[in-house]
Image 1 (tube, rainbow, N blue to C red):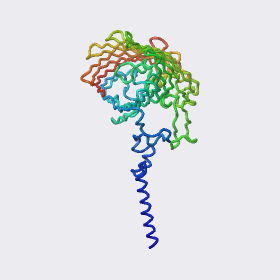
Image 2 (cartoon, rainbow, N blue to C red; image 1 turned 60 degrees about the horizontal axis):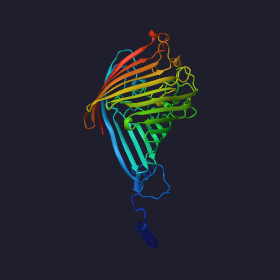
Image 3 (cartoon, one colour; image 1 turned 180 degrees about the horizontal axis):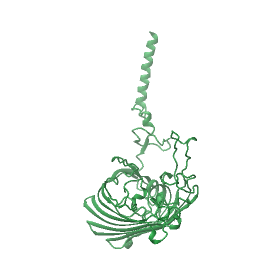
Image 4 (spheres, helix red, strand yellow; image 1 turned 90 degrees about the horizontal axis):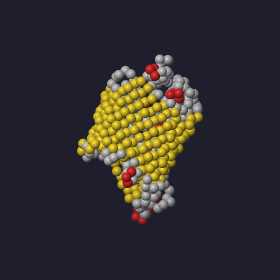
Length: 468
């Protein structure tokens, strides 16, 4: 009996001590406790607004405090809802990510046509900003629906942008860390098509990067960057990682019949100097760009395509880009570039290497666009672009037409595109547009002028979108 009373007294004593601690403590020890999942990465609460002292231990994946004393912040959702009605004579599915060059080539000679209604270019993004008037911090996460899966109208979202940008001196100097638009040859034309003139002169992509920008004056901006595609899995035809096969299991162990084969690709290191006009030159921009990287191609052949693997590849690009405001209603934009081994990072999948020799392929690319603002209700665009690899660099990788057949279903000798676009606002942020594109592609290694295999095709797009 005495023992039982002692246990009861002990319980009461512990309870009184706990209540006293709750009453005196400066921390919410009596509050609802987080589960293990909430405390470490997987939980519901990831931000907590409080003033905390500097020097405390922080966990990268745990509860993150908001520094309420360091500037004011804002949070802005934004996006675009778009539907494109497409009619194409290109003999490809223009929405199939597996047909890499289907985005921007005249792919076949069968004269078949296709049509579709496409909502995949819709975009949703979140932007967070914070500033105290001197320091500026911005974070952006953006997605679209052009992922690798298009199954029974199930269109999963895809990471489009995810970057943070910080300036310690009122945006005179900024650093961008994360996935953003390519900072080298960064000018983009204004057409409706998703490919933004990819494969036909425009060198662009969305790339993981670390980019430092500095404004020397109001007119002159300079940047340096380190950037690369996330890994080598998006290549094909012998220069790609081989996943385990014929083992009955997944994994990277020693019993796999296929070796790890990812190319050793260091980042591109590049720089860009731009002049932005003011006063009478407002709207004018001229920029010079250069980027370089070395990498080692895949060490072993990854397919039955004959290729010399494991070669040292020097990839580079030099280029100019400009915008000229000719008059209030007329504007000209253009890019001109030359380089070699230009592939994924420049929206030129599998155009970088000769598949027989494994050597780098040189190419010249260019595009130009004229924009005419006819009135507040109509803007007209006319553009032309060309991607022109050096023919002799592709010798053996593309067979002569009529001699051993044509194996150039992906690589081309020349690819050109023209487009005519009209854009009309309907009301507020609701727009409509119509676009005609004409493609001309030379797929075969020419032996004579008449033996070149040429394909021409058209694509018509009627589009409506709402920016919010």
